[in-house]
Length: 341
Image (cartoon, rainbow, N blue to C red; front, side):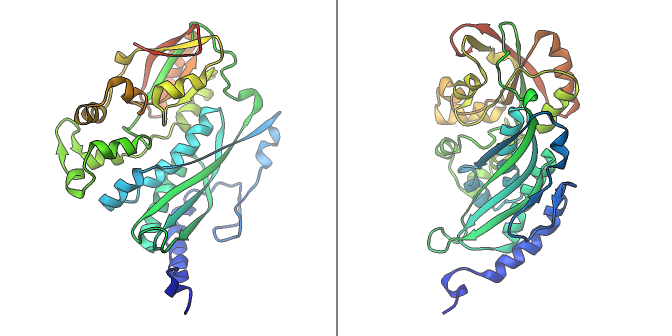
C-alpha cells in the first residue's frame, strides 16, 4: 500500500508545478522574493514606506459553478482569469492596487496538463491586474470529488494610502454614475444559467446568430478586470467618490453598498447596451426583468460615482485603459438604495 494507490499521485503534483512555472514566471514583480516552491510566498513591502498611512486590502473568491461549463467544454485556460478578477476587482473597487495573488485548486485527480492550463489562466488574470502570482495549492481529493472535477478559488492582497481609499463618505446629490461594460455573465448567477440552458457539450456548442458565437463561448467569456481602468482614472487626477463591483446580487444588492446614508442611486436602464446573452437568457428562462437585475451584471461590471465636473476626464481615462464607459445615472438625496428606470 502506498499514497498513489490511495488516490493521491505525488509525482503528478511535481509535474504540475513544473508545467505551471513558465506561466507563473510571467507575473513576477520586483517585490517578489524567492521563487515558486517554497513553503510560503514572500513579497517585499519596501515600496509602501512612502505612503502616509498604508492600508492592506484583501479579497477572496472563486468562480462559482461556472467551472462546470469549463469541465463540460473541456476548456480550462480562461477560468483562472475569473478567479483572479473576482478578487482584484474588489480590491480596486476600494481604491487599492493589487500586489499578489494565491490560488487554490481542489481536484478529484491531478492531471498535470489540465492543472497547468488552469494556472495559465490564473497567470493571465494576474498579468491583466499587475499582480504577482506568488504561490498556490493543488489538492487531490480522491473519494470526495469525481476524478474529472475540480474547483478553483484564490485570494489577493493589495494596498492603498488611507487618504485614497474609496469609501463613499463624500458622495453627494448631483454626482454622476459611470458604468464600465462587462464581457457578459462574468462569474455570478451560473446556478440560474445552468437551469435555463441544457448543460451538454452539444448545447454549449450551438451557434446563436444573436450572440455571434456559440452559447458556450458567450457564457465562458472571462470576467473583465477593471484594475487598470480605475488606475487610469486616478492617474487622470479624478477622485472616485464611490465604486461598486457588480457581482452576485446584481444591481439591487451591490449598488447600495457604494452609498452612504441619505444618498440614493438612480440608474437608467436604456443608457447603455445590454449584451444579447442576457436578453436570450431572460427569454429562454422566462425570467422577470427585476430578477435579471437582481442576479446578473446586465452588461455593467463596475460603476463609479464622480463629480459632475470630472465626467469627461473619467470617460477618457476609462477609454484609454481599453474599457467602454457609459454615463448611466446619478446620485440624489433620499433613502439609501437604488432605482432602475
